[in-house]
Structure formats: C-alpha cells, structure tokens
Amino acid sequence: MTARVYEPLTAENAALVLVDHQVGLMTGVRDYSTGELKHNVVALARAAKALSLPLVVTTTARDSMWGPTFPELVDALPGIEIIDRSSVNAYDDARVARAIEATGRKKLIFAGISLEVCAAFPAMTAVARGLDAYVAVDASGTFSETKRQAGLLRMAQAGVVLSDYATLMVEILGDNGRPEAAVVYEALDMPWATLVGQIATALGK
Image (cartoon, rainbow, N blue to C red; front, top):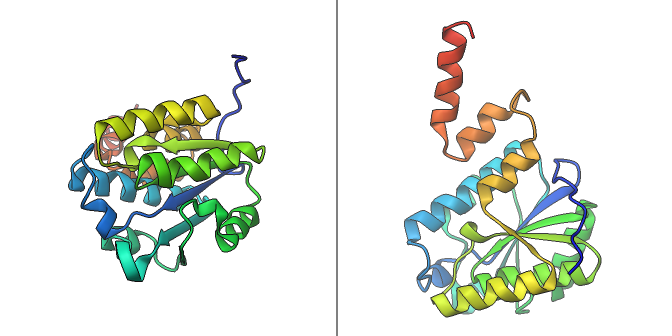
C-alpha cells in the first residue's frame, strides 16, 4: 500500500459532516456511554464552529423511526439546518450531497451513529469521489464490538483516515498562538489548557 503525502487539515480546506446523532440511535450505542458520546460530539461541533468550519448536519427517518437529533447537539448548533432524509447513505441524498459540495472543501470530517454505516458509508463515498475523508471515531458510536471493529477495518481498507475528535480539531487550529485557541480548547472541554496559559501569563512567562 502506497503511503499518501501528509497534507494537514486547515480551516480553509476542511468541513464537518455530522450524521444521525439521534435520540433513538443513541439508545443502542454500546461502545461508549451516552454521556461520553454526547460530550464528544458536542465538543467536536463547538470546536468546529470556533474554527469557522462549514457544517453539514443530517438525520434519517427523524419522524418515523429514529427520532430527533439529541438536544445538546441542537443547542450547540443554533441556526444550523438539519437535513432529514430516507437514504441509508447520507451522500445518496441529493440535498446532503449539494450541501457538502457547497462547502467547497476537499477534506471532509465525518462522525455518525452508527460508526460502520452512518459515518462509514458517506466517508467511503467521499473517497470514491476523490475527496479526503476523515472519521472522528470517538464522536461516533455503534451497537457492538464486532460492528466497531468491522467498520474500522472496512474504512481503513477504503482509504478513510481514522482519528479522534480532539486531534482533528487541534490539527486544524495549527498554532496555539491563534486568537481563537482558547475558545477551541474550551470547546474541546480542555479547561486546564486555558488555565495553564493564564498561570503562565500571570507569572510573566
């Protein structure tokens, strides 16, 4: 397998796609606790907003099967339209595909419930369309360890980059001297990073 040349994620080349973080699907997740998964998804969304990334958010069968997006995520994304669809693969929905294309970004970060379907299928589709796809594994969730391992393996075989939500956002931040750094770390729920900075400033370092 040929190694790809590393090209960093930046605020200018990346977008975030959140797929099906719905109340009904959340109840079946077994690889993370509900509290941890909610925390991770909300932190990812808030950090992405702090970095001014374009966001695409979608649900499936919201009114008939899987229910609404969980309230904490809705609260973190005021004014963001959530596109409801029926297709299993979010990328198969024309409105979702148009919204992704409208971002103009070539590097797409996905997170979804479930990992092996809702995150994996559109991420693999993005790769097939010549885009770079990343999945924030810890902002996704699934229903068994078998599904988790099979999903990770299939995505890796398809060329999807697997990572965690905080690493992806810190990569985009790129420089801790940027004015939005403190807001990003706060969004990532890393208050100790801000505290250490405040102590250093107070000590004149």
